[in-house]
Image (cartoon, rainbow, N blue to C red; front, side, top):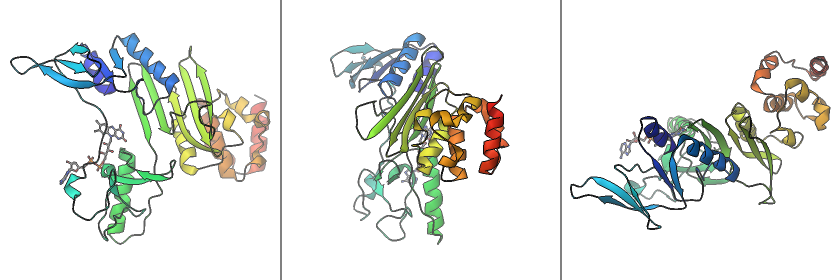
Length: 313
Ligand SMILES: Cc1cc2nc3c(=O)[nH]c(=O)nc-3n(C[C@H](O)[C@H](O)[C@H](O)COP(=O)(O)OP(=O)(O)OC[C@H]3O[C@@H](n4cnc5c(N)ncnc54)[C@H](O)[C@@H]3O)c2cc1C
């Protein structure tokens, strides 16, 4: 919807966005980042209406669209309407088939339905959500791809299992770029079971937020400077314990700063494995410094030497 609004706006079409909930992109943005998105729309000169919904498309005598009536009773004159309100599995053709269906087709971790040798994958299924620990539809291409691969392999006699997925979104419109994943909309201080860390620098246009639950990264939002998105996603996938460096996850750090691990109470040997130490490194170091890590030593003693060398820069 936002991309369509942007495209029409760029073609000189006057656009008004009508959003049912009280903020822009409510499924993926928290209150603070949504306010940034609102500002971007305002700066671009795009109108928006929040907390309202279209109840009727009005037409003139010739059948052409002349406007929409909102639930609030307001009328917005317009010549066209684009509906972008989400995705729902079309399970109607499967009614009476005996296949278990909730919101989508229920599958096990082999992507097999309750009927033997009947498999399903993609937007139509409810598969395992790694973060929620429950099954639900997550309609995203990478998950559909992985599920299809697993279903296909198992149909051919393979033994592949789907470990689960989680929502990941990346979109840019009107100079506003966002990457978010998992439980991104948890607000700071609202739910006791989550810790929320935020770094915000309005002047430089940087907003980073991570949601940590049970010492695992559960979700994030990054605005504009989105270079850590892959690393954060990797931390969610790996279910890695981030307790040692969770406060540093959103901080702005140069590599020499980040290498002073002791400043964060961290030492390389605090980590259970070299792999975890590397993951932490990738999580903390801005992209411009990552090239140093392509030559990162592989033994902890070497890392210590490497660290002291870098810290003397
Ligand atoms: C506008 C839009 C933007 C999106 N942007 C992103 C994005 O940026 N990133 C991302 O990860 N995902 C995005 N998605 C979601 C992504 O496209 C889907 O998750 C993915 O395509 C799902 O793959 P699928 O194979 O399950 O379904 P589909 O790609 O929908 O394929 C299903 C196919 O089945 C066909 N079909 C339907 N009924 C029948 C029938 N009875 N018999 C035979 N064939 C049938 C359909 O015609 C279709 O070709 C977007 C989706 C939309 C609509």
